[in-house]
Image 1 (cartoon, one colour):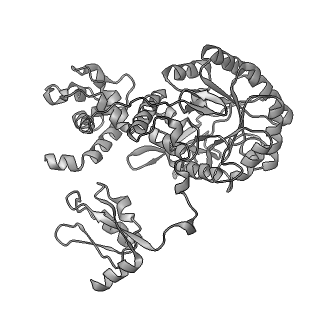
Image 2: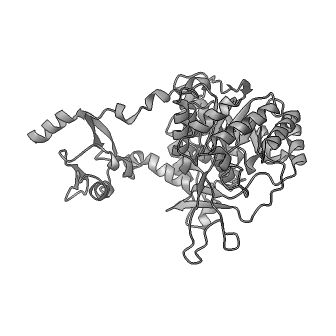
Image 3: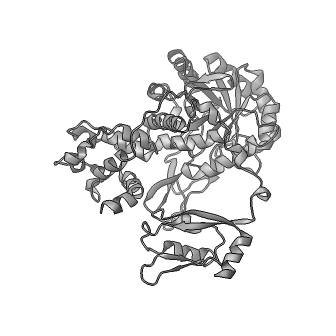
Length: 511
C-alpha cells in the first residue's frame, strides 16, 4: 500500500486539492488541535507552491497522531460526496521536504517605474473602486490597472458572466460581456487620486477609452493630474456597445497611431497600448502605438467568443432575457494564445526592447514565470482573482521566491526573456530524430487509455498485453508524437531515448 501511495502521490494530491472548495474562513483550520493552517496548505498545493505548503507542516507531522480527524468532520465537501482527504494532502505535501525561499529580490522596473513585485491586478471589476484596490494593496499586490474609464455613460447588463466547464473541472474558461466602468468619471478620478495618496509606493495604471482624439487627450490629462503612474490605452475591449471603440480600434493600426498620439499630447507619464488578440498579427498595431509615442505594450485582452448554446432554449450565455452578445473569453484556457502573442512581439526587431505587461490565463506563480521568461516585465491578473480572491497573491509571491532561489536566481529580473531563444521557426526544428516514449511498468495501471488514443487518434504504435493490459510499443510504427505521454492519467509514460530516424529504421529492420 505504501508503495502504491508513493507511486501515485502526485496524482492523488492533485485530485484531492481540486476537490477542495477553497472556503473563505475555512472550518478545517478552525478546528485543528495543532493549529495547522490547513486551508493555507491546501491552497499552496493548489497553486503549485509545493515548497511553501511543506514549510507550513511541522515535523513530525501531527496529523499522524490525530484521532478525531476534526478537520474532515467539518469539511463542507462532506455535505456533497465526502470530505476532502486532508490527511493525504498533508502527508503528500510534507514528503517533499523543507527549504527556505532565501534572499530573492522580486522588485522589477517597468517603464522606468519601480514595482515591489511583478504582480498587478488587470483592468476589470477586480480593480474598480478604492476599497477593493486598497485591500489588494495591503495583501501584497504591487499595482493595479484601474478599471477602464471613459467620458460617456455605460449601462450594464445582468447577468454578464459565464464559465466554460469540462468533466469535473468547473472553470477552465470564462466569458464576460461587461463593459468599461459604469461609475461617473469624477468618482473614478477621486478613487485613483486617493489610492495614490494612501499607497504612494504602489503603481497605479489608469486605463482609459475615448471616442475621438479629443476625448483620449482629455482623459490622459485627467488621469495624470489624479496621480496615475502609467496610462493604459484600452484599444482592445471586445464587446463595447458602439462602433469605433475597443477592439475595433486595436485592429486598425491607423486609429491606434492617432489615438496614442492624442494620449501623448495629454500626458508626460508612460503610456501602454493594450492590444487585442482578435487579429492575426499583433505586431502591426503594436508598432503603430510605439511609433506614436507609447512606452510599452499590455497584452492580451480577452478573445471574442460565444461560450455555449442552451439546446433547450437555444439561447446563448450569459443569458440576458433570452439574448446575449459576443463576449470576451479569458481564464486558464487562453494562456497558450497569450504566450504566442507575447513571443511574436518580442521576436519582432522593432518591439524586442519594448516593455510588455503580460496577461491572459495567469493563475499561479508558474504561469507568471512563463510570461516573464518570454519577455514580460510584469503580469496582470483578473479571472483567477474573480475565482479565488486576492489571496492568491500569497502563493504568487512565495512560489516565485522558492522557484528563483532553488534555481540559482537572485532576482526576478534574471528570468525575463530566458525562454525566447528556445522558440524557433518550424523549419529550424530537428526533424532527423525520434524521441521514443518510456513506460514505467510499476506505475502503469493497464487502463488502456494510451492504446485507445494511439490507435484511434495516432499511429497504431501500441498494443495491449493480453494479460496485464499494459502497453507494448510497436517500434516500427512509433513516430514519437507522444500522444500517449499526454493522455496517461497516472504519468506512467515519459520522454525516453532519442534516436536518429536512420538508427530507428535499422532497429526496426533487425527486429
